[in-house]
Length: 202
Image (cartoon, rainbow, N blue to C red; front, side, top):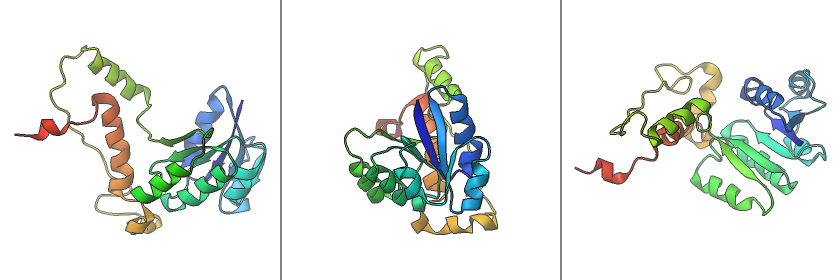
């Protein structure tokens, strides 16, 4: 049984990671952490035994084997480093860091024996894998081209909600390009493969 601690459990993780892990055999959510004890207690109300207002305390707890990092991108590095220093496995939301340099530093910080991964929402989805199998097996003919049409909200479009105003700061690592595009392009990659430069030559 892999014992999981979720950092950022009152946000996106509450509607995604928590129910998904609860439904998977071999995983048990043993701890949650948010920025306040009150919200951590609320997130833990449905059967999670441990609740913390500090990610480092969660990462150091002996009943946590894997730390899921589901906070703002600008906070990823702090939480990931705390987990790695405690010798824990890490699953981080995309993007890993606020920029390529920070992501590279975090990847290098992962010691041998620690399993670490970055979660891209659509890459492992059954739908994307099914389409990939159809294309690979030639069931729908030869793929000649692919077009990606995707919504950019809530991080793009004509209006950004006031509660997401922080996402307009490039230093925060959160934007339409770094978040939404990363997820969409990873899903396209899973289905159709990585576009080759030769395809764009005249």
